[in-house]
Structures are given as C-alpha cells and as structure tokens.
Length: 257
Image (cartoon, rainbow, N blue to C red):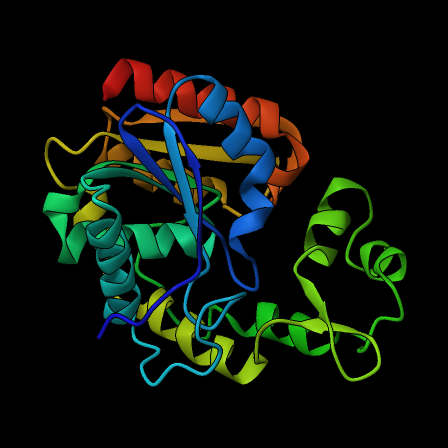
C-alpha cells in the first residue's frame, strides 16, 4: 500500500520527469541535474524512496510493489503522470517495477548505472556491509564528506545526514534498507526493460558497477535503446558529472519522447 513520501518539485511546464535515487540516497542529491533539466524546460520531480530521507523510515511493507505503488501514488496526487522515470542504481529497479505494475504511468525509462537483469545469490550484501561500516556518528559535515568519498560525491552523501544523538547520522535504518534492497533486486524487472514501444536509455559510467556482460545483454534485448557512456566517472555519475547526465537525459527526452 502506498504511504506518504517526501518529494521535491522544481516545477517546469514540460512533460514530467521523476528522478529516483539509489540505495541510502535521497531526493535532494538530484538537485544539480534537476536544475539543469528545469532550465531546459522539463517538469522535474524527485522523491525519497520509502525507508529513506524524509519518507517513512520504518515502512510496514518493504516489497518491490510497495515502492511502485508509492511512485504511482505520488504521480497521482501531483497530477504528473505519465512521466519519464530516471532511476540511478536501486532507483532504476524501482522505475522498472513501476513500468511493470503501472505501465500507463510511464512514458519512458532512463536507467543510470542500473541493471535490469534478474539478480541471483546475495547481490546486495557488499552494499549493506559498506553501510554498516560507517563510523557513526560523524562529528561534522566535512568529516563525513571526506569519509564518504570526498569531492562532489562525498559532499552529496554528507548532505543526506541529520544531526541526531551527538553527531551526524543517516536518515535511514540499515536493517530496513537491507530488506527493501533484497526485495527490489529479486523482483522481476526484465519484462519492463523489454516492453515493446517503451523508450529506454541506459547510461553507464566508465568506472561504474555494471559489468560489460550486463550491458551487452541489456542492449541485445533492446537494440533500439539509447546507450551512453560517461568517461572518467564512477557509479554516482549523476553526482560527479551532472552536466553530462542532464545533457544526455535532455537529448533522450527530445529525441524519443
């Protein structure tokens, strides 16, 4: 069941674009990309996924379909559907589930460093171990940003923390994230990626997490997909290279939507 979710709305008069963050992220991390898309005339939205940021921290339901219902509920309340869904990493899995469960609300899909293939084994274990390794609390934002990668990436991650219990702490519970991460990775996503007629974009960073075999498999299944690479960038490419990401998204929207 959909629960109230926190969101940001940059306005704009064009067809709506909804930006979906990755694991342990938050809507505000999309600000540099969102501003650039808004300047190009797009209606730009972002939301905190359940379990993240300003949305419900301990949701009753951590299933993949609950995430899809949250998106559908937000678009319905804002009168913003159908929308182009842009999902980075785990946000890409959410976007794919929305396309499976609520296809009438999706005009196109842009996956940023996100794999649509079925997951196997324990695919999220490394990410969850990393979240558990954070030396909490961080004493200040500068220390947090440095530990979380430095530069634009570290600063954006630090921007998602809150002052609580004697220092800066995450606005999420790692145990909750572990459950929702597992559910989203295991939920069928391939049918959305291969849906006939749905415009799709795959954006890959040179130093990201997508294996070349994954990219080949996805493009073989959708030879009509746009595929773009960002040299020199890592998994958080939207934080490192917002100009490039916004430019690629704008080109995709103009040409395919």
